[in-house]
Length: 355
Image (cartoon, rainbow, N blue to C red; front, side, top):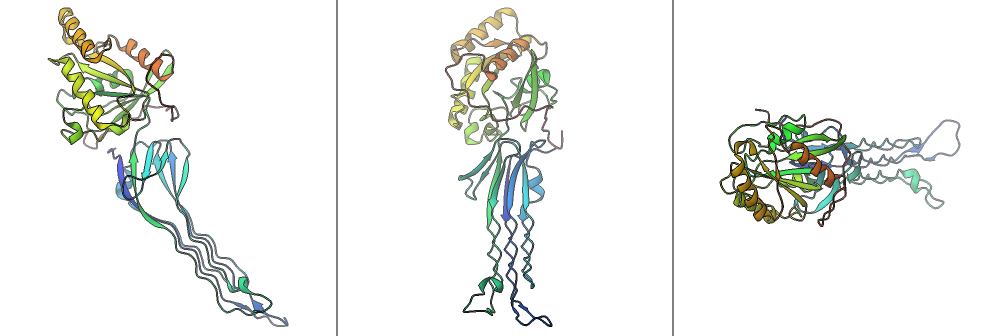
């Protein structure tokens, strides 16, 4: 399934039905009079967050959504039927913006949340509505009100507990594949990961969701490489796992490069609690490992975890450290945002059509 995290959509609610002009004329009934019914209300346009979706790919094939028009009123005081509503089903974590792509309308952060994007027009009054003691035979009715129309932007930010960040080939996808049932593409060349991937990790009976995004390189905030467009998918996480490959000649510089890109992006990422890990340690001997671990500690100001997703060394300790932050069992000066998602039952993997 191809991943799509932004879509532009046109929506229009239904017009209200027109009121009816009708007069009662029946044999053997002495007095007639107006009996035109009111028009029905136009349909609304709603958005609903549903489970089981993790991409906006459906909106690539359909960009126009129009609710039904209310039916016109009829004689014998019959009111027209209301127009049918239209509901846009989006993944949990989708944000809805105005046409300027900056003004936030609503943030769909929980399953089952609904929001009315455009209200349908009211139906017009029939001539029976205007009958009075001084005007007993009105021969006019109101037309229905027009519905609303607008262009909106949908922007998806995945809901996860842990975000994996680092340079390309830092071992993020391998880490995800090792500790979850997710199966992202893994290869020994930069930017193997082209789209975010999700997986559910379990340690000591506790589950939490990990999000793996494409690697960052120097100048990503200016669009270099894949850029920083996927960083929005780790904005909602509680903690970032910053992986630095042991194969880097200068691990301190590698750490600072990613840290600078996170700071340039903004979104509160640098304020999030961060766990630093030196990955792919199976390629180093003990002396070189101690040297690079010390260099990474000086650059980050934290004692890094040492792990290898290939051999499994240090993986349990890393998962437990992440679990402690997610569940609130660890003390941290950084503020941990409120959890805003329901636990997923199954791993979700987002893959490109060509993978």
